[in-house]
Amino acid sequence: MNLAEEFEAIYRDALGGPFPYNDCRWLADRVGLPDGDLIPELDDYFATVAGYGSSATRLSARTPAELTSAKRRLAKDLFEWHPNLEVCRSLIDPQHCPDLWWRMAATERLRVGLLALLGKLSE
Figure 1 (cartoon, rainbow, N blue to C red):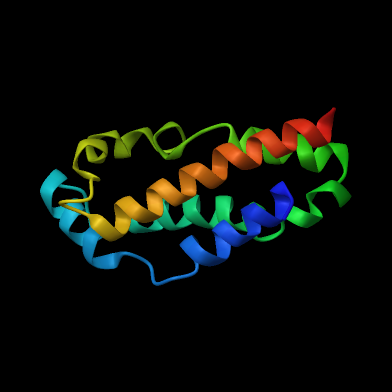
Figure 2: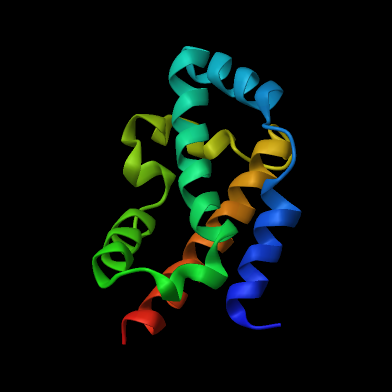
């Protein structure tokens, strides 16, 4: 299995399950954020990374401009894209938010790996 295939497998295995709504509601309540602020921002971030992960084997067919755009989007983690969520960082752990923590960890592994793959494709 090549690197791109591994990323597609991570996408299928780790990001295909149900959205962690219960963990998000608990988290939003603890930090005083409305669910309506937290859930859409997380969903957008997960969807962005998942979109590239689900098509990792086809990234090489993208134009240089599309690869540059992908690198720009994947260069930032959740808290860089949504600084208002920084207050959540310390509570996203296996004890308090196990489903969200697991999805965040898988998304981060995928994001960093995709960045490396995009770097190789741009060479």
